[in-house]
Length: 76
Image (cartoon, rainbow, N blue to C red; front, side, top):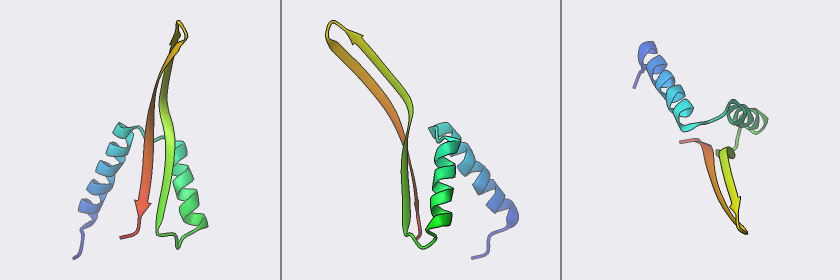
């Protein structure tokens, strides 16, 4: 199956937009790229990053909410 250049660019643009909407940081992308360059034969790369963290303390109780983003790259 041959993919046209326009279709490829559209898929890359869409993927970039989805990464942005989910909250993947530039640091997480750079860390994944570095791992892929350092260990090119690895079958999968997984990195997790906390993007938001909220905590509230009152009367001896603490409420905490954390949003984590996990970026997984696998060879198919």
